[in-house]
Image (cartoon, rainbow, N blue to C red; front, side):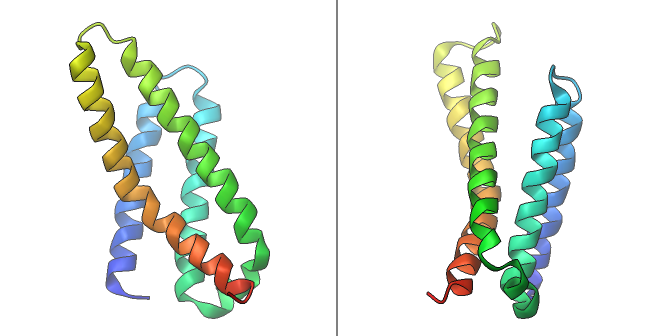
Length: 128
């Protein structure tokens, strides 16, 4: 596995741990923390499976349901963040738009590579 994939996983895991600590302050925290753990687990499996051929082959077509579940979780988490931030009276509408766009951009920078590797792994596993 290349060094940058290891660095990506380390940064991704640390960011997820920080997100879990942030989720501890919210209502329904167990649901969101469970989703974070599931999401990070899938990304770890995707990255390891992509670079470790034998392991990746063992995941087979199960990569596709994991992708769907992971992406749905990420969309729900992004929506939750936008809704919660919109209720904060400390921000104007313009500041909220900027904050939401920056948040979505940063979140996508971290999450998209893992899911892209998962998609490429799934396609490789079905022979495409």
